[in-house]
Length: 575
Image 1 (cartoon, one colour):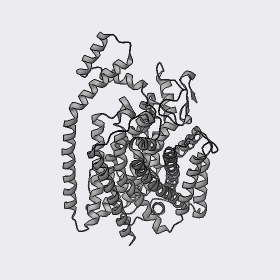
Image 2 (cartoon, rainbow, N blue to C red):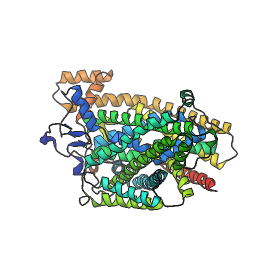
Image 3 (cartoon, rainbow, N blue to C red):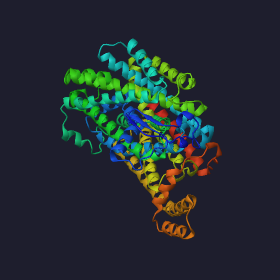
C-alpha cells in the first residue's frame, strides 16, 4: 500500500469547503497520500504509485455509465442494427471527456458538490430546477438497475423476490460502513469483473470488417422516430446528467485538490477507455451472437442473455448475465450516491462516505429510502419495466443539454474557478456539444409530431440546424477573440503582481511578455497551484443579462417539450 508523509501545518480547510470530512489525507483503494504531499522530487515509480491512489472517481463514474440501462441500450442497438450505430459511441468520446473534465476542475478547486454550486451561484429557483430533474431521473434510473439485477439473476434461476431485496441490502451495507477506502475497494472489485467482456466478445466470433463499417455514420432503415429514440437513448446512457453530480462530489469526498487534477484527468481517460470497450463488446455480442432474424425483436437484456445461450453457447449467455448483474450493481451504487450527495448539498447536511451512519443520518437514510422505493417499483409488470428502461435513457439524453449549460456557466465563473476557468477552445467545444444534443432532441420532436415526415426532410432539418450552429459559433468566437486576448494579458500581469517579490523591471518584463503571449502559461500555472475558491457566501452572485435569462427560459421550455415527446413516443410503443 502506498503511504506518504504528511505536513500537519497544511491540514486546514480551504475557503469554500463546508464538510470537514472533505479535508485531509487522500485515502484511496490502493493507498494513502498525506496532506501536503506533492509529486515534486518524486521518481517515476513513486508518481505512478500516487496516480494509483488518486484513481477512482473517473474510473467509477465511467464504468457506472455502462449500467443496466446501458447494457440494454447497447444490446438493443446491436440486435436491431448490428454494428451500424457504432459511430455514435465514437462521437460521444469527446463529449464524455469535456463534460467530466469540467466537473473534475470544479470539484478539486471549489471543494463542494455540483448541486451546492448551482444553488449558490444561480439561486433557489434554478437550483431546484436542476436538482429536481436530477432526482426524478435518478430514481427511475435506479429502478432500471434493480430490473437489471432481477433479469441477470433470473438467468441463473434466482427469483425476483430474492434478487432485488438482496441487492438493496448489499448496496446499503457497502456504503454504510463509514469508510471511503472500503467503499472504493468494493467498487474496484466490481469493476474488475468487467474483464468478462473480452471472452464474451470473442465467443460470438465478431467480424472486424463489419464492425469497422459501423464507424461510418449512417441511419439504417431511415431516420425514423424509432431510430432517433434509440440514438437519444445511447446518448443518455453514455453521457448521463447524474455523472456530473457524482464525479464532482466524489472528487471532493476523496479530498482531491488542484495539484491532483492532472492525475484525475488520467483517471478519467482510463475510465473512458474501459466504458467504450464495454459498450462495444455488448453491442458486438448482440450483433454477432444473435441470428439475423432476431433484429427488431428486442425486449430486454435478460432475453438477450437467453438468446445468446441458445445461439452462441451457454458460456456466452452466462457471461452476458454476469456482465449485466455487475453493471447493475455499479450503476445503482453510483446513481444513488450521486443523489445522496446532491441532497446533502441542497440541505446543507453532512454528506460523505467518511462519516458513519450516526454521524450523517440524513445522508444514509436518504440513500436507503431511495434504494427501497426503487426496489419496490422494480416489482412492476415486465412489459412496463422493459419500456421504462429505454425511456429513462432517452430522458437522460434530453436533460443533458440543460446540465451541460449549467456546467459551462460554472466553468466560466471567474469568482468560482479563478485561473481554472474554461478557455475559449473549451467553451467552443462545449457549445458544439450542447447544440448537437439540442438538435438531436428537436429532430426527435419533429419526427414525433409529424409522423409523415420523410428521412430526407429530417436530414435537411438537422443539416440546417447545424449550419445555424456553425454561424452562431463563428460569430461568438470572432466577437470574443479580442476579449480573450485582453483577459489573458490581465490575468498574467495580475498573477505576477499577486506573487510578490518582483522588482519593477521584472514586472515590466512579464507585462511585455504577456502582451506578446509569452510566459502566460508559466505565470498561470503558478497562480493555479495556490488558488482555491473562497467561501461561497463571500462571492457576489453573477449578474444575469436579459439575453441570458431569455436563453435559460427557452432552455426550460425546450426540456418540457422534449420530455413530453419522449413520453408520447413511449406511450405509442405501449399501444
